[in-house]
Length: 361
Image (tube, rainbow, N blue to C red; front, side, top):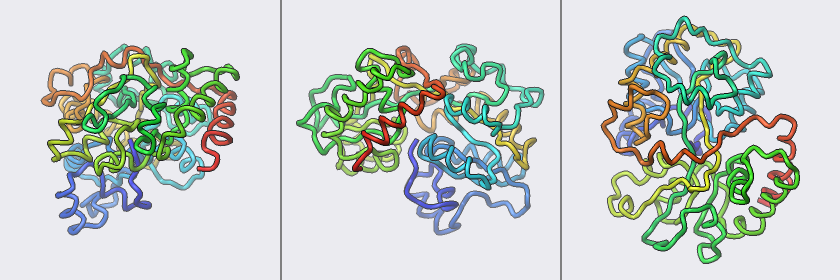
């Protein structure tokens, strides 16, 4: 879930096409979001590397529409853009804490579940965990997962499967962590034995100090945009991030793939349920519902998961249709904790992150 450093609508050409295909596609059509000439278009704002191009193309063909697909690097970036207004998007994919925040600010249309025939495919456990909207009033779960740690074992043969790896001075200037406040703060909190949703000022301060004093001195940077590319070209040996991003970047490099390990630390960390939400004022509400229902067809959901070697965490029937071995198991999510909307206490996190951890960056 990173964002490529390409401005505006140009990003829509970079869904999940392999590099060789991207070159041809770019030459054929600069934007590549849709080959439709009609005025019926669905505008989607999603995380990068999160919906395979084949899934979008099949939707376009079946419904004879175009899809304009733009991407974001973090919930904070997404929220700021939507809050500024005038984006024109129909569907957005926030994580659970931001579903709460945005729903409370009347930023979503209500979901009409009568228009969705595939909701029965969603794992009841996921809906239990989605305490921010268990009745799917404003959101429909898309994916349940977590960031983890990627290690190049050729360069780092000995390591603990723990967040403490970022405290290793011998790996200084070869590591990155995400430029994501709740993710990094959450990792520090669980390392100290606290909840990723702590609202205790002393615990938040302790997490800040762990990051500042132990982890940050060894990092090249906090990076949510290019950690996959940096790992692929050898600049970084250890990165916090999303498995699918790294494996997409190293595709075809069999030696590097063989030396690459992804794991979610046993101590846990922040998990996410990203959901599909229809933005307030959408001009394509019916089409948006069609897309949401389309995603939860078992064969489509399996295609989505196979593209990134995900386990089918949300859609139960899709699990039997997977053709690829997932990069991690659903069981590895057992000790993770969903990030909640911490309300007014978010200011404590903002102060720790922007006024201290990120200062001078």
